[in-house]
Amino acid sequence: MDALLADLSEVLSHQVKLHEELLAVLQDESVSIGQVAPSKLLLLQSAKQQIAHKIAAIETRRIGIVHDIAGAWEIDSKELTLSQIIARVSEEVASILEECFTSLKRLVAEIRRLANKNGSLSMARLKSVEMSLRFVHDWQKAQQTYSDAGTLQSTPEKISRASI
Image (cartoon, rainbow, N blue to C red):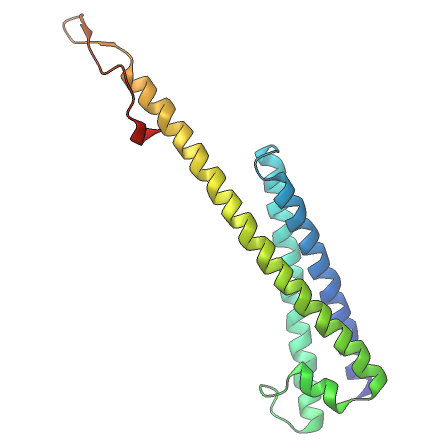
């Protein structure tokens, strides 16, 4: 049992580190939105994906350990929570697990908040780019053109405010 709890503690510590890395990338992305080249944003997106894959892999390992603990305690693994594990182990192990659990909850909440903020900023930037492209497109259409007969066609000189 001690080996399983040590593995669980190690996995949770690793999850905390990975979540801290993800938070750092999200913070970098938040500062970079609208101020850096798209290639840097693609690198940040790639880093987020790599960390997310690592988190998913370690989460699978954590679930396996919890399943093994549940088997040792003769409890259904679907009903066993980290809070229940913390309540059943020694104070020393419980404090380590509790610290990791608290850190993970805090990090996940911060990651969620920052991801929502970054999504909103990205959406606003995308809308701005779309409007700029629409303006340029409409401006090009507003230029005088030649008809099939070789005469200049008159086109509206103003672009409507709705297109800006």
